[in-house]
Length: 147
Figure 1 (cartoon, rainbow, N blue to C red):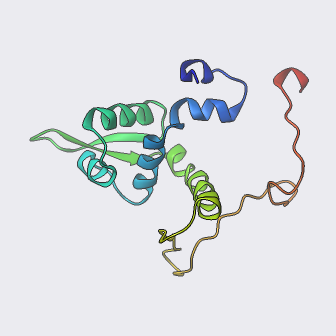
Figure 2: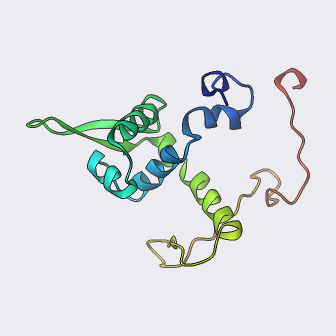
């Protein structure tokens, strides 16, 4: 898959995959939602090579899902904070997790709890217009030329 070209595709799924379609980027966003902000925190959590992490953080920053903020002048250190676009990615992560729990489950799995109620979060995608659960009705893909 050529990610350079996918960023200009009319399909929003292809455009999204162009920058967040690899496992490292998805896991960085997962960890950012869990409160990690610093390079060393991401590196320790993921076991990722520093050069790979640097590239992924740069891409997520360039694409507007994370923003860098300096937290130390001596030595200069920066942290990575979720932007509005990054925060809006949380439902995507939860839907991936729900799919993984159903089809890649087995053994002990992490659970995601609502911090206020303590109840487990059970993600489901619903069409805002019809209220129907996505996946229960046929879909049709309409190209920009057909609009």
